[in-house]
Length: 130
Image: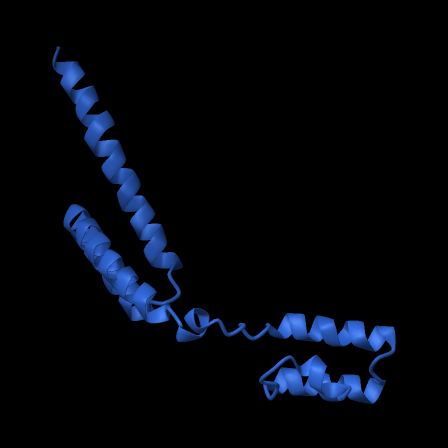
């Protein structure tokens, strides 16, 4: 009957803790908001103190995720202002206007330069042909 408790211990404790530990290590490696030094420090803590490091990382990351979520909430979205379109969308719209004949090649090049230099605050394709 001793084997039953060993199997139960492995299935309910060892395997889940190992999966959580490996998942945390992968997450630390893949995070782009941490510097290389921070990643190395977290991995050292995780390898030296596996259970304590994993629990500490979970607590710290949950707290910082809440702070990041509160920090990234923009007042623009709540004020109902439209978000500025991305550069790819601007270039696609500009190319569509050039192909339809609404823009000349010179206007297209000027608009493309304006988009790529980041000077267009608003949809650059709208301001080029007017």
